[in-house]
Image (cartoon, rainbow over all chains, first blue to last red; front, side):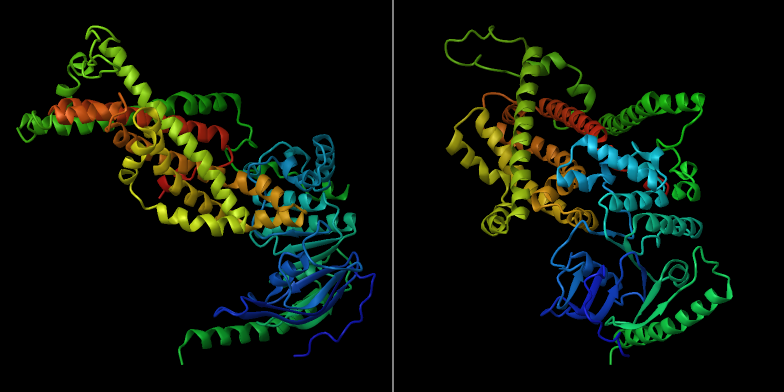
Length: 275
Length: 316
């Protein structure tokens, strides 16, 4: 399967991956290749969904972009800077709750400002402002365990937004939520995204979610993860997922994904049955 | 703002019973009364019942002749004559040459002094051990070189029985409070270091990664994420080690620290006085229970964010 043709480096892109590979646990019996030769360019303010079978390395790609893990080969650039480590410009939002349980909501939201050495007055002001943007002003003084799953994820989004990131990295952020809450969180995310002007990299294994949200959907192959194809979606938002256009997209993405899921299954079975 | 319109504030689906839900006043008063008065009273009742049941079994064994009162005196015997028991709690120097046996504290005062002395040794030892062990444990994970230089030795000394340290304590500190406290410290220290390290290793990776993406330095990550994250586990470690400290202090005291519960037990053994043994055991149990209760209350007060999973287990 051919990956995306080589894209020349452009300084205005918010994110550029060139020839990116990642091999985990190099030199150990558990060595395995997670990503191979990823080339992609993401524009400022673009919403890109990463779609692929589980274990295809899409989350790995987010960790590499966040700077939390070193790359094996290739390079990642963000606004003219080569990524060498984590940065507040690129905030990562996890699938499970990652709020600090011993801090109140406002302390969680302004955690990054505290790291920078901001005083409490500034922290409270920024937290108040950001919480208003995510519609959670009432939760200012609450503790995370007093909130529902959806509210917690919104606080996590607020915590990321408080750092005014240029890129938001989201690792299946709504996977643990029920269907109705997930729907509302998607609307919420689109509002936040339009407000912030940040690019969003959104990892999901949910085709509907990708169709509802993204400007472009990057479909990954099964392990090792390579870019199988990129599908652009030009429909206006909010999208009606029952419209013929969305239906066509869903069928197209399902077909792309089906091959890979089948391949992944066949591989797993081959591993499971001793020769 | 568009977000406000599209996302309702969702207060209604907050966790039931948590602070987010406002109960009607009557119901709230009821639940406060339940949590503040009824539940502790109920728990105390169960504790008493548990002890009463155990006592009953013992007494029945005595009644039917299974428990010889000279060897296994049941509670009504060893608790029956407190004044008699208290006489054995000699503090200080009554037996020394030139001291009038009638001088010194009264028997009941002596019991209190003995309890106080032992408790002090436990608490001081526990405090010293925790401060050292937690600091060393954090340093081990913080500096790789420190880990390589110290962790092998700590692991090596960890399985050594406190009994083996007893002669060392006496060589180093002679008799008195110091060797007893040393014994408590040395018995707890190595385990607590290892427990601290395993607590640090168990911190949720996501929390650490959040701090890293926010630009936290190593020091900030430890100070603001890892230390608060391991506090709940450390308090459990502390509670477990409180019991260990009570065990070790008896061993230490049995060798000659002047006075203490361990010495009373030793004297009871030497004078063949089973009643005194059981009386002292009852005192130790009561003290350990009380201190555990206090630590649990402290735990609930300062670690307000730790969910109580006991309720879930009860539901099984």
